[in-house]
Image (cartoon, rainbow, N blue to C red; front, side):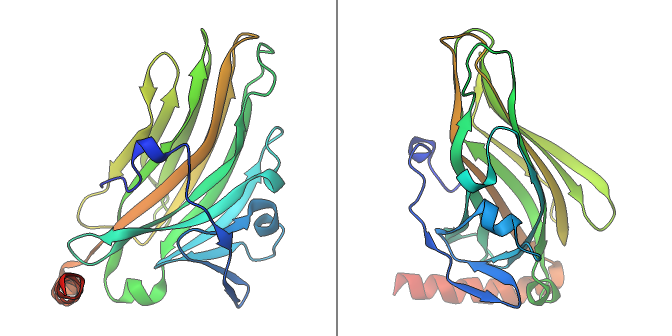
Length: 239
């Protein structure tokens, strides 16, 4: 997967507007549209549609970062892959970090959710293909770190598919990626854990932006149809 946002822009995530529509208790977010996480988690149905994906947000827990201070922003890539399919996901934005440097307390937040291909797209042969994680974590001082750990499970078989890690400490890794092969999947269960520690009184550990991004491929039976669609889109873009 090609990460859609250059790392030089991570400190300034895209501006967002209030979410546009709701339908049958489902929040629909377009690219750059936002909902406050506390508002979302207070709903009986925590279902969000972004592009051709459905996200169900199951839980958010943190003793340090109240959900009212966190925003969820829809993300749909401007470009498409060779099949005419966009990357889809969301951004978490907020003032994450260690607000009490030197206390030896890890400031943490956990988000549990599922992502699935919408039924209408799944019937056309669209499948989840890979996942990407990136953030703008910053850490300074001996022992300080900012990191996000993530586990991805096949929701239909409860099979572990892999783990992703991004971090900034004595070394830096601001993006990670998992490729699940050409077969693809219908849905994932995702556990995302954010951790921050400023180990000394003058240390720093912070982050304002975490992106989750998924791409998709067609099944072999759907390849011809989606290939024609991609070619038509390419001709229109060149016109």
